[in-house]
Image (cartoon, rainbow over all chains, first blue to last red; front, top):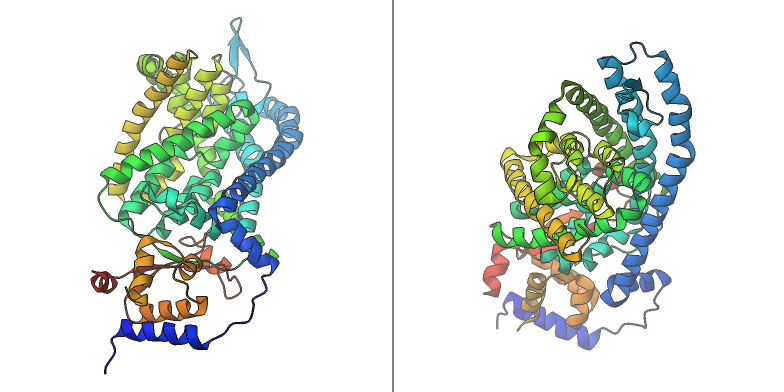
Length: 411
Length: 85
C-alpha cells in the first residue's frame, strides 16, 4: 500500500507519540520569561510596563541633557556670542542665519533664547544638536537593547492580532517604532512588509500619524504636560484610518506562522553597531534637512510667503480646525520643519485644547521634506496615493478633533 | 483532518510555532521537522527572516552569524492553498 504525504505524516506523528518518551523538561528562567512575555494575559501588561519604562527613560535622559546642558550652552553662550559677532544685525542674512528677532515699540529687539530666534545657526543647530541628538541617542540605544535581547519579535507577536485589523501584521511595529526616532529609516523599514497593500498602508500611516524624535523631543521640552493627549489622538487616528485603509485598499494581508527566537544576552558590539549606524544615518540624512529646512523657512518668512499663505488660509484654520489664525504660519512652515513649527506654536497664546489640536495638526500634516524624499524613492504612485489620503485625513481628523472639543465645551 | 492539513490550516490562522504545537498536541521538534519538510516540498515559504534593521544598510552589520535574533515567518504557497482546498 502506498501512502500519500499527509498519511505518512499522520503515521510519523502516531509512531512518535507511541515510541518517543521525553524526560521532564526543566524550564529555565529564560523559558519562563519567554512565555510570560508572549502570552496575552501576562504579555500585554509587561509590554505596557516596558513601553512606560522606555518613555520614562527617554524623557529623563533627553530632558537631562537638553535642559541641563544644551539649553544653557546655546542660550547663555552660543546665541549671545553669535548675535555679537555675526555682521549685519537687522538684515535679512542675519535674520535667516542668526536671529529674526522682533519689533518692540518700533525697535528691533534680539531674541533671548534659541527656540525663538529661528536662525539656521541658532534654532537650527539647537534643535538638531541640543534637542534631537540626545533624544535619538537614548531612543536608538533602548530600541537596540530590546531588539538584541529578542523582545521585539515577542512584541510583534503580541500585537499581531490588533495590527491585522488594519491590514498589517505584528512586524509593522518595527517601522512604527523606528519612525518614532526618525521617519526616514521607518519608511525604508516598510520593505519588511510582504505585500504592496501592507507597504502602502504602513507608509501612509507613518507619514501621517507617527511623530519623529525631533518633534517628540521638542514637545517634551516645550509642552510636556500635553504630550499624553497629543499621542493619544495620534494613536487613535493610526488605528481608525488604518482600519479604513484596510477596507478600501485592494490587495492581500496574509497571516503567518512565526518561529520566535529565544531570549539571549545582549551583545555590546551589536548594540554599539546598531546605535552608531542609526545615529550616523541621522547625521547624514536628517541633520542637513533640519538645517536646510530652517534656512528655507527663514527665507520664506523674510519674503513674506508664509505670512501671505497664513493670511489666505487663516479662515480654514480658524473655522474648520478651531485654532487661532496665528497658527497658520507655523502650520505651513511645518512642511519643512515640524520641530520648529512646534516651537513656534508654543509661544502663541491659545487654550490647551487649541494647542493639542494645533500640534496634532502639525503631526498629521505633510511629512517633513526628508521623509517626503524617501517616500518618493519608494515609488511615486505610492507617494501620490499617500498624499491623497493625507489630505483627506488632515481635514477629516482635524475637523473631528475640533468637533470633539466643541462637544466637550473646551474648543 | 490530517496532521499536515492541521499544520497548514494553522499557518492560515497565524500565530507562533509554540502555540501551534500546543494546539495540535505535537512535540515541537516534530512540528519543526514537518515545517521544514513543508517548506522543502513547496507547501510553505519563508515570507520573511525578520530582524528590525532589515531593509536598511544595518542588517548585514547586526544580523551576522552571531546575532541569533532573526524570526522566521512562514506563509502558505499556492500549492499549500490548493492542498487545503
